Image (cartoon, rainbow, N blue to C red):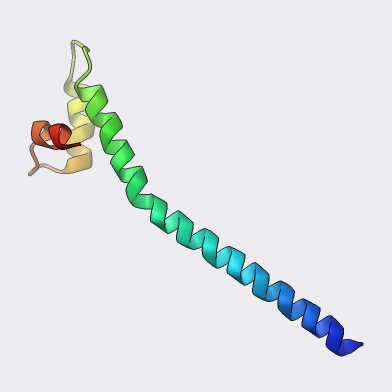
Length: 77
């Protein structure tokens, strides 16, 4: 009887481990997609018809860093 309970517990632990591992892998794979989408949204805000582009430019500059060209980045997305 104890062996059956131990086997059920082991199988349950193994399934929970596989579920946790696969969830972690999926989450890590989605990080680059999130970064690209954030860049696209910032470029859309920058390229919008707004009169004052400085807030969008500041956000893009903090996202890209000082060395990259904003226009080239937004045109390549």
